Length: 184
Image (cartoon, rainbow, N blue to C red):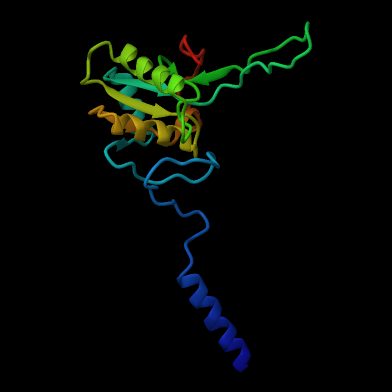
């Protein structure tokens, strides 16, 4: 009996000091550098965090620019000649631009230039428009991209962590999108 009580006490103590299995991680100081699919923070310092209803309202109101940052798989360079390569289609939020590969923790100077040019192109000189970054649910790529935009000084940055998964789960429309030209 004594061992059972002691064991129950130790188990309860361990549970009290262990985070729940589905706990949201804290914001890192920098960027997420690996394991880009997994639980994401509930916050992003300097940015608004949107749930699906808020994202839908921003989208339907037309006051925001939606930027999809899901990576794009390139055609493998070593495919034998004559092999048919089929691009994987990307279904995204209608009207969004797709700036693939800009959400990695570290990006090459060419990718950074592509990212900055893409943002400037969609803002078209209107710095008051909100930039909404997304990819898939539990995807750090959109968190990294939104953080980068905040650090670059864009004043109206939002992060939609539900991404196209959350959007589709609410029955909202998706449409095919292709990467913005100039992808490195």
